[in-house]
Length: 305
Image (cartoon, rainbow, N blue to C red; front, side, top):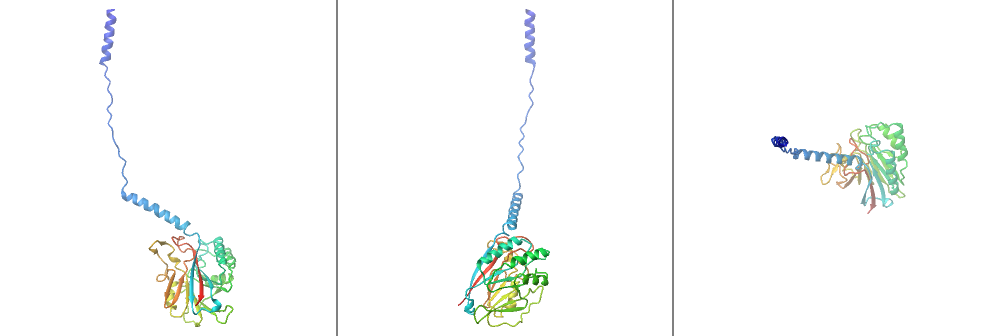
């Protein structure tokens, strides 16, 4: 019995002698690295820029705006009172404009029931090979334009072959004007005159051609050519080429314009009593982008005073 008690005491003592060594733990706080303000700004600007680019490519190039203007003139014959002129320009066929979109444009124009349709150049683009198929698409579609008086056209700087352009535009039902004028009557004794000048960067406009004293409309491609005809007594000058800048910003307006539209690029100018309207066009040039500058064509309602 005594031995058992001793064993129990030894066991208790051995338990007391056991020590538990717990590992020491140190809390280490690792703080995440803070992004620099500059990096945040750059990432934000990149995302915004990408969204703007996508918008300009896929949204800005869509849709169609009809810009309507009222014009009065004491020189317009009474037989032309209320004349409706549709002005299209810068189609650049094969870029963003395909046959389906061109057909939609033609349908919108036909709803207006214009008397005259004018085209101020750049039917196609140097970057596009105008195959027989593409040419047939253009001819078949533009032939559907319905007018009561006529269709008239001049070439642009991107219409790289005068032979192809003249063939295309005439087969499309337009009268091609290159240093030429047309006298037009409309059920009355007094006519109006439409004059067409070729693009100055690829041809030689003849600004000395004789003109009448009738109500005169000039067709040019590059609006800066206005300075060469502003003293010719034109009542109305219609041009294209500038695309309105193609990429525009609120308040600022156009960002850049091509040569030939550095001085005149906006919608309307009045120089020496000559009114000039600039079409912002239907297609795109160089970059297939449009920002705050949707495809458009102009409608002029001209009244005699």
